[in-house]
Image 1: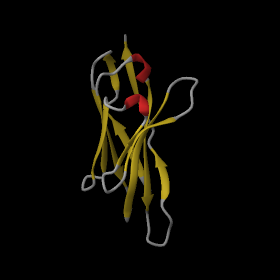
Image 2: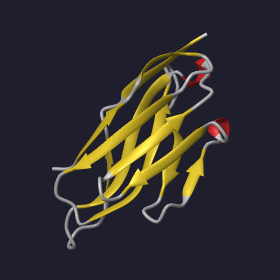
Image 3: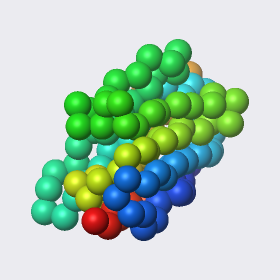
Length: 121
């Protein structure tokens, strides 16, 4: 069974930084696109950033220039470096990954349990 486990969330003052990590574990033959989404109270879950296995990245306009996504394929880990945080970044951040568990199966999309990021003004 594939699991995605996030860490690194917490409380930070506006202007501060946090780095999130997400480790994928379990049986897998390919680990494809990995990404971070966030969901604030009463709002939908939105993409923050994603990174393909080859390193191509994509960012939401609201975080461009402030957040950086990266991955270590050997460690099956994706990171999100968040700088210049503001209260609007407060949300639960979820890790997401496309994982193929067998050569005989199509990749499946998995989610982590989420980690809370709170930015105080």
